[in-house]
Length: 546
Image (tube, rainbow, N blue to C red; front, side, top):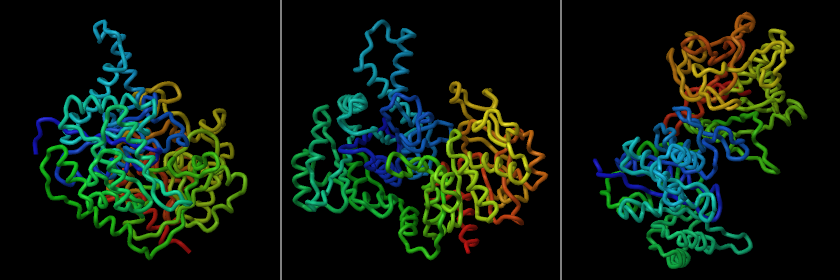
């Protein structure tokens, strides 16, 4: 279905953040792809960072890592999972990137002596990057999610860019506004006024939404739909309900039942086609089905607590990967999010009763003692263990200390003066890592690994060469390979040049499942294709449970 030029759908949010704008965008993108269109997605972030790599995960959640090494907002993970395809640096825009590009161009006299202003120069750069993403991905339809909410000063230039595109190309731009209709408990009815005010903010920027996506706890009656349509200046048929559902993966089907995809295509002047949703419907049916197996799993991390609240966004991709695998295997998964610092203070009693343990990504020395305690507990008690990134490095440290007898063994990230640096810095060299700056350069993106035959890793992947995404600044110290392997430590995968230790494990003869990878398989897991590591891990843990 060749098109003369791409069509664009802007998705904005109102009333509050974390409303599900990303899931709405991902769901709509997936539905249009299911109609046979080539679709891509762009996320526009408000912050001045160039990427998400240096943002504290407690501040903005898990930085999603793309195949090309771009560290992005977690919404790109939602897009990849719903669309089933890889995205990259061109799909992610920050205001820092925009300002830097404009200033760099001005310093090179790229504007021919003009005085540089927010409009048109900054907005033109935003539009250029959006169109570049559509062209790069050969997209017939490009969805653009605007970060934050309407009315924030940080994102006003994104809204201006969308307004300008609509003005210049009237029939190629549609605006979808996702807004919250709260139901105060003391009233017991959904209130539309916050959304009316949110749309008023859009109108003040000369933007009239074509569709309203109403986020609610339940349904919306006819009277309130009528009032919402009247005061927000939209057709009642263009109000799409997005009520709370048991699974986020139901959202596309909920939209499809309301013909949201058909209505969008009609607004864009595009022909409608039959939808291919069979596989997705089968997955959702599995997700909602009653599970006959149960498993309690502990994730021992350091980014769960923020103030008085415990959140899971800091490990969002990991939770999703576990979701995919548990749905495929028919397991009701109970996850205990354990703060490693609490384990340090209260001991390993926090781990009693768990049937599997994961130690995920982490940075810095804080909380590492608790993670090492959890790893030792898993090793001694033969509890299935999966280490991810830092989880490999600390597993090597634990083994060196408690099995090999190197009591001072450590990572130089934790103790730069350690006598036995089992884990140390990756050489500051473009050959080994992406140079971003001192303290921020890392091995980023997808890299190949060679797996040793006869290992658990080989059994899981079923092949000798794999490719996984990496995001780390420290590595296993090759000077200690012999000392650890002499005591039963198995190095099951390395980089093709044998420089990086990629996976480690313990023999299945002494432990049912003790495996760690320097990579991040969680970023490649998708609803319709769960990652084999998580499938094998959960399956073994279910069979091994007492």
